[in-house]
Length: 217
Ligand SMILES: *[C@@H]1O[C@H](CO)[C@@H](O)[C@H](O)[C@H]1NC(C)=O
Image 1: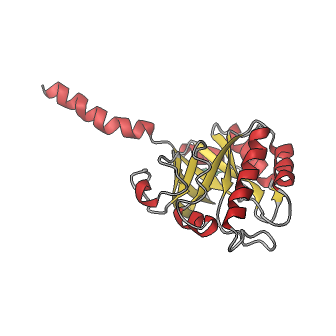
Image 2: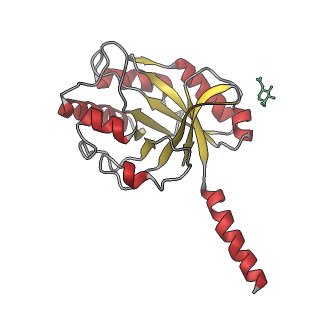
C-alpha cells in the first residue's frame, strides 16, 4: 500500500513535468542557444519576416544557431498589410527560409510600421489578407500556425469570434500570466479554436543575456 502511494505520487508529480515543453521566441541576434537549452527550454521561434515587409536574415541565422544547439526551430512571420501582396511577402520569406523550420506562425497583432497596419474598419479585408498569407504558405507545402491574443484578434478581426477560418491550424496564443499552462484558455479564447497548441506566458524577459518571451507547448 505504501509503495502504491509512492508510485501514484510519482505519476501525479512526474507526468506534468514530462509533457511540459518550454521554449522561447526572440528577434535579437543571438548565438548562445546552448545556454537556453541548458536552462530547460527545448524550442526557439525566430522572427522570419519583419513588420515593415522584409525577410529577417538575423532570424535565419538564429534559426540555424538554435538548431545547431539541439533546439527545435520554428519561425514567426509578421505580415505587412498594405505595401506588398501576400504572395510577394510569402515568396520572399520562402526563398530565404525554405524548409529549415518546422512551423511558421503568422503574427496577428497591431503592426506599427508605416503603411503596414491592419485596416481599422475593414475586418473582412483583414481576415481575407490572413487567409491569403496562409494559403500562399500552404501552397508551398509549409506548416502554418497562427499567433495572436484575444485582444489583438478582436481588435483586428472585429470580435473574438470573428474570422474562425483557421481552426485546422495550430494556435499560439499570448496571455502573460506567468503560468505555463492552458488552464486560462477558455476565458481567453478567440477565432473558433477550442484548443491551443502553444501559450506565450511571459513577455519581454531576459534569458542568457538576450531578450525573449517564454512559451509553453
Ligand atoms: C553562454 O552562456 C553561458 C551560460 O550563461 C556562459 O557561461 C557563456 O559565457 C556564454 N557564451 C557566450 C559566447 O556568451
